[in-house]
Length: 101
View 1: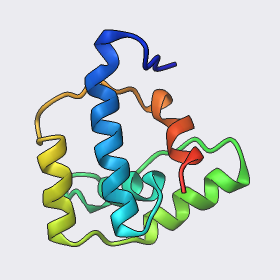
View 2: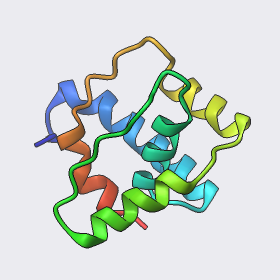
View 3: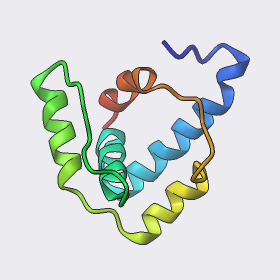
View 4: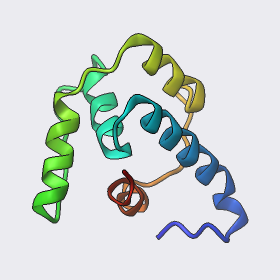
């Protein structure tokens, strides 16, 4: 699990908080934003998710139906520039995504 007390995780939590603010401003959860973002990439042909509950499945499916506008995509790219690795693991974000909004 991603421990916020560790110094090496500080930047990860800055990124997560910034993305959470973007999701909030767009009126969606972080899970919705993540799935919609992945779906918007032309090189992505499918998105594999691993929901553990029906609520999580619903979150993923709702996100898959959303279309992000170019300004929103640019905002995300400014936070996590394409080609740069944030070193955030998906399993670290699951609790954050589904605990929000």
